[in-house]
Length: 498
Image (tube, rainbow, N blue to C red; front, side, top):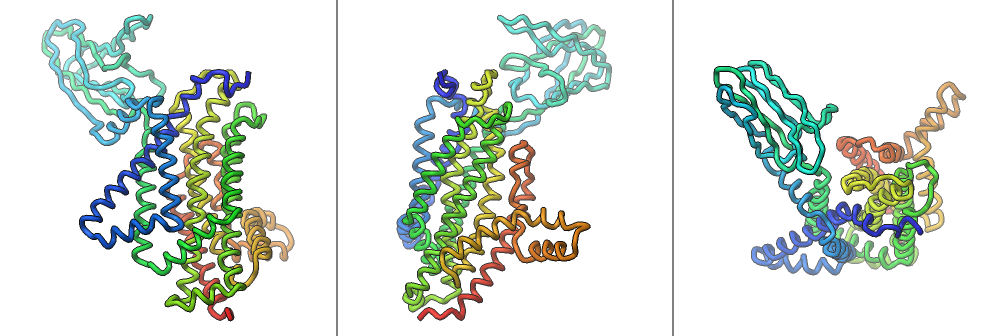
């Protein structure tokens, strides 16, 4: 039998990570509705504008997408260990350092001390006594043959400490921490106990981070729509036009089908199929998003100019720079929609692939935390790929002001290929001919260095990507996009539209 269907119970393991994304979408929808209700009371006109925006090219599709994610969360709720997730979320927002001092009377043997902690959340433990005593930490659990650890001999004023991740096993068992102290001296002992706690499942942070990201996206778009209504109108029309194009539907359907197929495709990598799925998925989404963006730029700019539609639009109280900026904003919104749709599918397939790979390799069942860890490593790659797509949207927009669809496609994908080869060209020119070195540096100066946005090796290898790297990459993408838009404005300013 195919391992995909051999044991249905195994496929409950990757559901919590997928559920957290859907729950974040549902919470973002609820927060948006609450904000709309408050806006209706405080500023009815702005509330009307917000309601009208549901019919535009971005916020409307985004609302339907969030509803779809919310439906997934509702469907999976009975199958998800909600207690583990919510307990970890509460730990993230509560105090994590505790202290307790206990007096141990002389001659006491195995004096029981209960600690208000769950062993699964223990991060550090520190014991210190003012007189020599013995302390036993690990206790036997009924039904298990567990040998007690040797007693800890605490010298007067000399602390004993334990930290998670240093190779030592957890000093406690069961659902609550418990100590047993023995004081063989003639003086009472003051035992100072300090411990630190950490969330049992830190992967639960996916839920609040996804929620904040979605709320920030919705709020940012509403501010953009209210602050620059003319540019937002052009952006909305561009987004709606892109969604209506067959290439958008084909890209979404093909992307979902291929990402789902990646789960069962054998990569023959000796247990590293999950890494190959992440690499292939990131590349697929980026290429499909670039195709949609470049196609949309050609249709919404080049064909509007050739068909003199742009002349009609500019006959209204709209300047040429507003037209160009609106088109760029629309292309960026289209790219964002593609990544929100296909990125969510990639996160789900990555989580599912962990279980499928374990089943196919006859490994022990992974925990849902392992699925979440693999899923989280994909997020930086998605963010950088989106930044790269937006940068290429600016380049495509500049080309579209003068050339048609076919030249635009050729130029943009040539820039894409050379942009990823720039570091290789520059490195290979060391010690070679002067002309090769000159050409390599010229390309590196004029074309975007897209290799800055390629971290598939880090994503595949599980290496953490620093947040400051994402920030510097976003700054580079913003500066180059601004330069490309400036070129587009120069080319479009004196373009004869009649």
